[in-house]
Length: 422
Image (cartoon, rainbow, N blue to C red; front, top):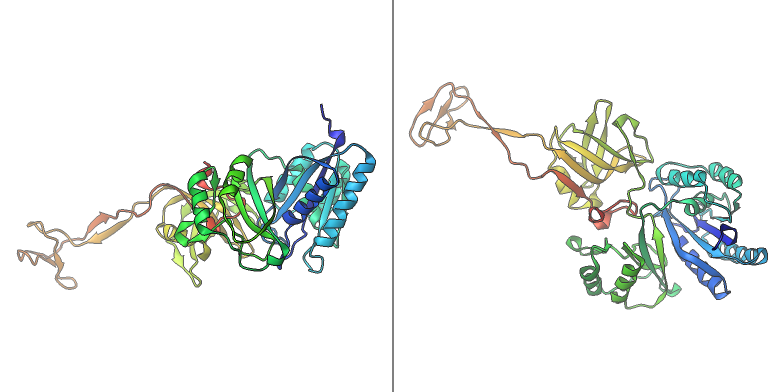
């Protein structure tokens, strides 16, 4: 039986920049080179998404880890040297906010390491926090520049995947970086029809949007998300492209698990740069502000917070507009620098009754008309006059029902759990 003594956990993070590159790609190159040199990898590499509201993140804030089977200390040193050389050579070190970190750990995944990893998804963690824990558990860490990537690299090693999904990433050849991706839309539609819901978030048909395609200058051509490694490989076989695929990798990941969300009892517990599940009552009807964003205020006995369906959420905004004062909701989302809750999902628990007033009905059955101010009402059908009548209170039929509503795939965060996953 294999022991932990000959397993080397490798974590890598923060190698990319806003202008390109991708930590998953560098890791893919590293893993292929290791295999070429005769090293054996254990299981699928891990793609761990960290706090989506971390202030220094680039794009999806993902870190990578993988496991190497080693036969000797000499072999371990050879592997470490290869990994560090590739990270240094391929990372966008020229960019101010690119600060790679690499962690090597050949010990047990302790409860403290697991807790730290979960914390990186839900809260803000410092470089010192990561360094201190690495020393505590006996992990070796390497920092480039300020070494912020050590946080994610350590977290990717220790993350407990209680719920998990898989993502197949197909990478472009370097000469196509920054160019328009050439993916056959019809093949994506066919793939979705044949594999959904075992694969998900493949496209947004209402917006004619291919959700598997990134819209950044990174090396990824497309990514297919699914419930098993087999189904994403099956889906990949259906996709047609008009450009060369350099390599593919299937990652096991915490994507689409809602692991970033913190359940709280009251709104006053909320803070910036964190994500929550909270409930309350709609304080006022939603209004649309400049830019097409829809805002409403949610309240409970402890306080209130503005909730936002931003313009990229498209049709989700129309559902939010149907909310009224007094509706009872559970909301899912995160708080950025502006202090408002970015909605990912809402669960309408109870709908308030909404009424409108109408003129009274005449004894002949027709609704009466106003006979001018303070003159009562008059029936234009039979001529009957009502001097002191009062308006009827009529309940209005709502255009929204109790239940869950979510943003479309084109606006979904990596960690947000789509309703199709249950």
